[in-house]
Image 1: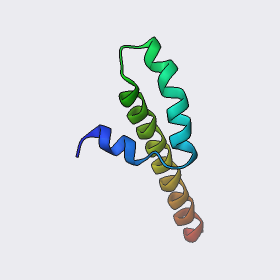
Image 2 (image 1 turned 60 degrees about the vertical axis):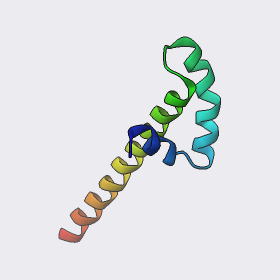
Image 3 (image 1 turned 135 degrees about the vertical axis):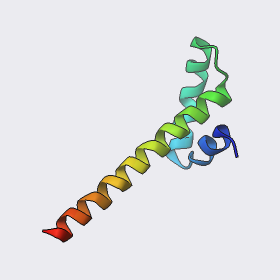
Length: 66
C-alpha cells in the first residue's frame, strides 16, 4: 500500500469535499497534480486524527493515575 492510497482512504465526508475544492487551485500553483494534493490533504487529516486520539488516550491515562 502506498502513501497515495492511505491519503485517499482518509478522505471521507466533509474532508473529501474540502480536498476536492482545495486540490485544483493548489495544483495550479504547484508542480503537484490534483491527485497528489488530495493525498497530501488526506495524510494531513489522518495525522491530525492520530494526534487527537493519542492526546485523548494520554489524558485518560493521566486522569486514571490521579
